[in-house]
Length: 348
Image (tube, rainbow, N blue to C red; front, side, top):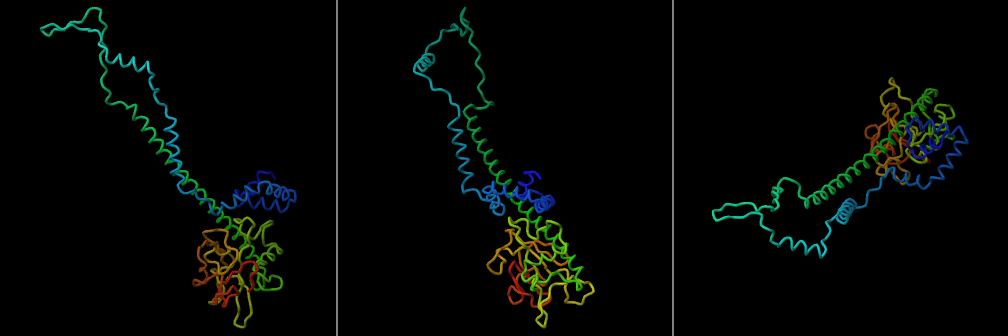
């Protein structure tokens, strides 16, 4: 594997498919993993700056465009070529030429008849006044105005392009996270198919006490691709996904979600139950803790395999808050349809 592939992997410029291949190669090849760490240490300052600007592109300082335009106009005025000032002798010669009486070239008789003086030089025919050509003095002013307009257009275009690039990068990170959730759903479906009751990994058991341990059982049973990391690739450290904490039965028993069954009675699990998601956004976070790596939304995976980006936590059945139960607690759902997703360390 080349250094170029590793550098592209560090700066998150690979498409999701290529990034998964590189990640798998790094996991399988200790030499590649060691080289990745060497490159990470070499470009640590640049990588830290790039990571900080991914989600929050720095805004230009206030008044930057106006100051730049003023500077360009000042530069043009200071460096515009000007006609040299006449010296003292040149000024005297010009004065004498202007006020001296030239020799007559014609003679006028009493009857008004005119005749040219023999040997007198021909008087050149005066050129017509300039009426439709460019004014030399106004050309410079027009040039400066055109330059200022062009500078304004350039600054506006640069701002639009920068904003478009930032939005495209943000959208690409959201898509990468959605593809990761879809891959996770394939593993969850395989686990449910092999479970006698068709249930997904349950949190609160000795093997999986907290919400961040559910993926271990999927990896152990081979339901996830080799090298797959069950976390959001948009985050620098692959933040783990939130996962369902299950629900409490009427006799206070905690159960995990079960694969949707079209023949099940009303009120049973269905395809619209959330099972995993990004962390909540800062505006939807129920308490202090890590939030979604996407500043504008969070991706939610439902039992049926659908992934939905949303800005609100109220996307459970009937507008249920997917990060708190009906009692406002981060705990197992109060009923079978009370969806609650827990972050790492959360228990049912």
